[in-house]
Image 1: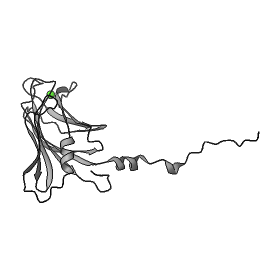
Image 2 (image 1 turned 180 degrees about the horizontal axis):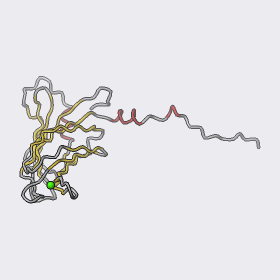
Image 3 (image 1 turned 45 degrees about the vertical axis):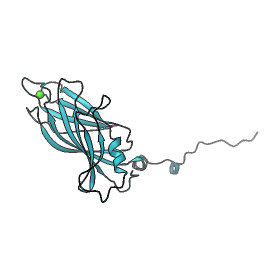
Image 4 (image 1 turned 90 degrees about the vertical axis):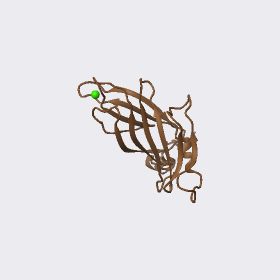
Length: 187
Ligand SMILES: [Ca+2]
């Protein structure tokens, strides 16, 4: 039989570029203000040199090291791109050491769903400081105290105080902000 040779022809036009597809899934940017640590664990002789590593999916960002302070004030903004609101943000505190491996000073997760859901509600015209959602501390989250999602200065923010796990002591204070991205899928 005279059958033509089948060729496996790939059509490059049909394959999406990774840049485009990741942009299609992008909801926007989550800006985490890492404000301060409170009563963090001692990992050197009398103090620690703490910094915070923030992870979301494959993204990993960190604050600067603050020397010899277990009540450090970072007030540093770390910005992550969000594609899946069900994915929690992981935070780990480390003690920087010059001549050995950095020691862990606890970790925590943040569920960003309540914050993302609040962003979908039309809020224009609400009085400044209106509380949209409150999240209570529970066994399933790492909250040290009640956390509020607020309408403040024309935007949605969430203040969070985390109790660090896998460590003897320490809390971490954060604030969540949202940045809409032109060209992204959005909420
Ligand atoms: Ca150290």
